[in-house]
Amino acid sequence: MEAEPPLYPMAGAAGPQGDEDLLGVPDGPEAPLDELVGAYPNYNEEEEERRYYRRKRLGVLKNVLAASAGGMLTYGVYLGLLQMQLILHYDETYREVKYGNMGLPDIDSKMLMGINVTPIAALLYTPVLIRFFGTKWMMFLAVGIYALFVSTNYWERYYTLVPSAVALGMAIVPLWASMGNYITRMAQKYHEYSHYKEQDGQGMKQRPPRGSHAPYLLVFQAIFYSFFHLSFACAQLPMIYFLNHYLYDLNHTLYNVQSCGTNSHGILSGFNKTVLRTLPRSGNLIVVESVLMAVAFLAMLLVLGLCGAAYRPTEEIDLRSVGWGNIFQLPFKHVRDYRLRHLVPFFIYSGFEVLFACTGIALGYGVCSVGLERLAYLLVAYSLGASAASLLGLLGLWLPRPVPLVAGAGVHLLLTFILFFWAPVPRVLQHSWILYVAAALWGVGSALNKTGLSTLLGILYEDKERQDFIFTIYHWWQAVAIFTVYLGSSLHMKAKLAVLLVTLV
Image (cartoon, rainbow, N blue to C red):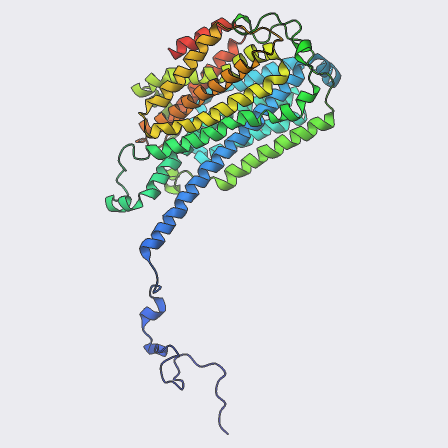
């Protein structure tokens, strides 16, 4: 009885075709090794390398867009909630009916103090936080603290609002330092991935030519600030679609206002203590705050899930190998740099002008003359002007680098001179178009100022291993300027404009 043939051929066994399979390649122990482990016959190493670095560049663009969108949503939620909260707490009827004798004005003043005073100490702890968490995780932590501030408004008490405001004040400078460094680092990586052939030829340890990443940095900073300035428009959505329906018109709120603009004193002197026709229901307020909380959580997810690491693990390890004492001293060592000392007036002015846009132009000239119900539209004009002008920073690709910075200062100088001699009449709407134009032009100057400064810092200090500490100094001076404006909020408008002129000139 003959043995049945095996169902599957044995490896190495000679079949009916001898030692060759159907393709004519020898089988068994005599098969050539190259046929088994060799390269794919149609493999093109140069093409695969090109595709690899193309994916890397797309990843960098994704990081920039995610960080920009995260910053826009974070500040849109924060500014929108703070604005709505201050308007509601300003109304006497709302305070008495909702909270009785809890002392909301005192809580609000301490909350604003926590937000404005705490960043003064940021130069002491920001380097330590960045050293411990790294750039990306510092961004995520700071955005999370902003979300924490939003969540405390579900239960408005002294022990919820004031501590969260202090925590938010601590997060302001670390957030902006890590954001500025993150965008700068993405520009360097994009240059590296775009010129990978030159990098291979020169060797990985050799630095690229000085200023080679500047065009990418200019584009990325323009994208970032174009997104960020839209946060002022996003912050007005709760006002436009919710709070405006409850406000009195200008004939009621401005009844006792006698002077506006350059003749005004403090913030909205003579403004009516009741601004709400009817009180919003608690359920409606909870819905609005829940939407804001969801957007803040979305910003956290954007930073966490879509923002890649700024540095390789070995580079982060190199930073952590630096002693705590040296990390603490780094910003103070950079302050001695003569280039930074020459830029300090721009840093200070950057803080002055952004707060003047929100308090001086929007309140002292805008609300004082055309009413609280038009505040949102004034800030939307500022936001859209600034967002569009951020893209004008791309002109720096063809113009000398200082041109956008000087152009922004020139626009603000011209506007400040005009505002110094203009006192709009209260409750008169014929000049409202001038206010919208002034707000939009101020936004143009703000955008050119901030885009130009951030780009200039990234170019001047590209030889530093880390730019976190350079941006820490920039935003610390900005925080000092904002704190100074907060202290001088009761000054005459002419004094505020004079300070702007002195700093600018």
